[in-house]
Length: 417
Ligand code: HGY
Ligand code: MN
Ligand code: MN
Image 1 (cartoon, helix red, strand yellow):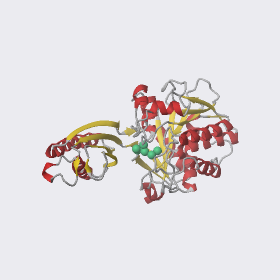
Image 2: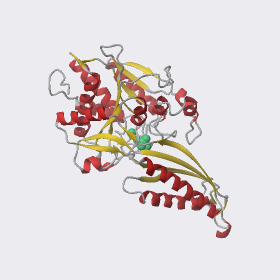
Image 3: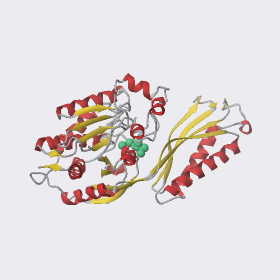
Image 4: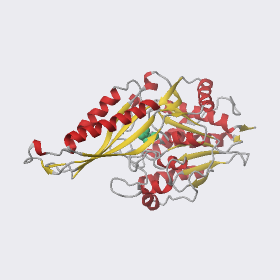
């Protein structure tokens, strides 16, 4: 383990916390969190603030055609591939102040600390803000990192539409963040992502650091059910082609499929649309996305097959049309054992309690892992709550994870005496 000049190396926790609170002022929610959805004016404002801070820290900015921001601190070896520290500044519509933001601003804090101490590294260090990690406005999640990893092509990404029918490409153009760089042209020596756990395990186990070994895989299955619009009052029950009823039976079935795969599987629905969405009209069309996840590849595929088969049977039974499109997917991820080891060693060296953990949420690191050695660091969050404006962490938790990030990044970027 490298000990930087002047032992007891730590990030500046106050400065990190202040940056988090300043960023949280942009795109405020209605209950103390944030609504800084991707490619909105609020996102543009947050990008500008991050760019200003990076300018102040002497970083040079590169932006790719998906709008992802890459902020570089030079290394001593111009031929050495950079060590990346990434996450995202976009939030859910009712998001918290820390999901994604902690990782980007902790990356900046690592750079600020290196600057403070005049530490040189062989490899450059790059702090990345990935566009549209959340997938709330434009599905799928982790869209920009997915294009970077070659999972999606640029045209597919640009054509993604939000619920108002606006396209990703048009919105990226509108906020003025279409970069010059080809997406994925950059090569990485290693990728680190620091993130709140977004689940209850670390807090329940009273651990300061999550050493993330894996991330569970995911399917987002978008169902479009076709019923018959009809009067909710005068249409006899036997005459109804009720897409809303079919949806409710499918939701119940998804719950059952996930519960039958315990432990270690989840399934549910967060978004649905009724058309025409009028109180006294049976829906002609119902669109909703089933989100299923598990660390087991076999379970993931089995759950998807079961859900699609049973949904078709439910719809047949009710005479409702049923089509399904996979609008998001990644297989379970195993992070790089060497980098995972560095995170664990850093926690031990710093004296922080830690445990191995599998990430329940998806992250840009999942796609980065396809093109470079990648891993994550996690800190607890209060009550395991996230994707909720009440999302909360302590300043101590935030700093401890950033210290671990600093040590693991230094070990990988190699200090030059
Ligand atoms: O859906 C996820 O896991 C992430 O928050 N985009
Ligand atoms: Mn996130
Ligand atoms: Mn999120």
